[in-house]
Image (cartoon, rainbow, N blue to C red; front, side, top):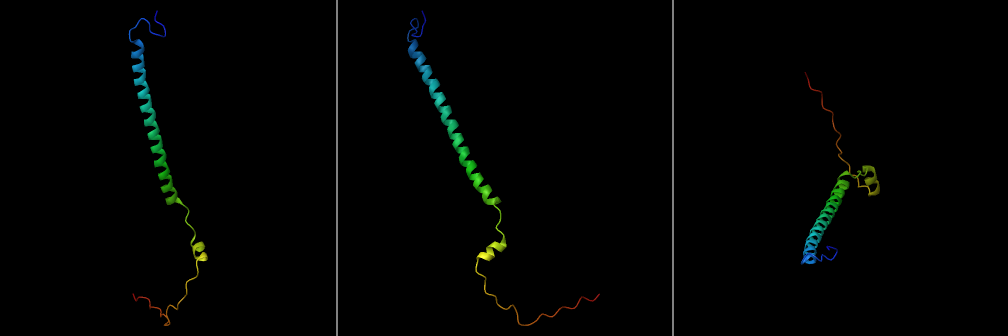
Length: 90
């Protein structure tokens, strides 16, 4: 009878154990590879999201920037008045 104990096959249990070990190692290697690729994807996607947000963040209006800052002291631009130029003669 060939039952769960492999009575008729010499060293049958040892052979099945070795084959099962190889299958287990292959499954472990595949699992580690999938986890590595998944974690790598998450890290790259997180970095890409940070770059995207940094590039596409809404720009703060100029009025809000100058309103919060202290106004710069104003100096007179020029004391001599400008004279308008004559139009070109044609």
